[in-house]
Length: 197
Image (cartoon, rainbow, N blue to C red; front, side):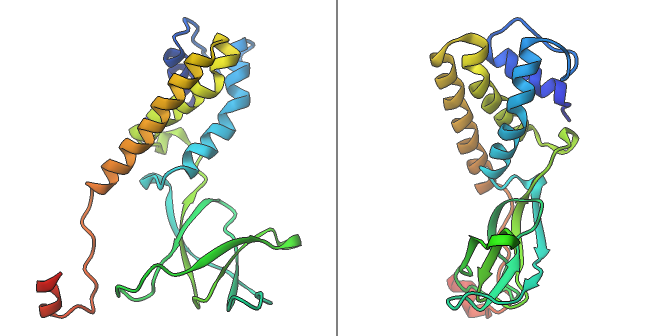
């Protein structure tokens, strides 16, 4: 379980600086740069991967007047960083349910689909470092280091190296997810179908 200060100091450590901060709002160059960059790095790192601690499922609120090429228009969840998929109501093996995220004037972002009573699986905005898992803290600190590198070290090479490690952290997270859990068998499979699967 990391704190905000620990994440910021990890980023500084990854840059090879000797500076450490004691409070995110202290009057130092390092704290000022990291305070500016942290919110966008946090959001981008959350959106980059379906982190387990940030996955939510919500029934979407239907809106009137869908466009002609879709059957339903739903309100985009306010805490959604990245829409992942529409969850099928039945555990069958139908292909992913098509949907589109669109901008709808005064309504803002909406989700368009042909699925009635749609439930969205998405990555939610999370801001409490106490809920971040270790892999996320690792990736976020490297992302933050890559973004702060030029301002704090004046080295594009350090920026490139930190960003490459951030990308590797995301690939490692994908590999970890692929090896975690067991997919649920659809309830509609017969014994014969299970034997062939």
